[in-house]
Amino acid sequence: MEVTVPKTMLIADAALRRLQAEFLMDRPTIWKFINGIRALKKRRDCLHEQFVGGGQAPVTRRKYVATDARIRRIVESYSERNIIEYLKGLSHNFLMEPRKSG
Figure 1: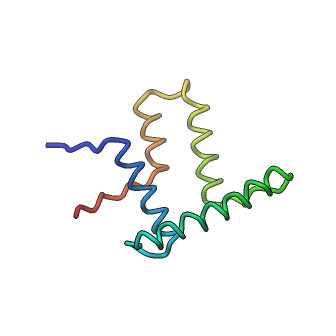
Figure 2 (figure 1 turned 45 degrees about the horizontal axis):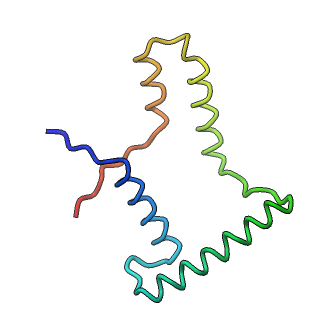
């Protein structure tokens, strides 16, 4: 039996992992959470102002640029492939790790 996880749950899990990384802790107290959110907002506002002022976005890591280019080539060659080859080509560019339960 295959269990599917709703997309909203995956998004919520990703957001939680991002917050844990930003706070450098797994289970912050309510005040540490509030102060962490304030600090995060301050950093994001500063970055936004830099972008509005003409600043450059952070450099994308080379491996992501290379993956993006491979995916773009596969998508652009969609009409030249059968659907199975197309999907296999795309799937080789994603690392899927099993979800940890508990």
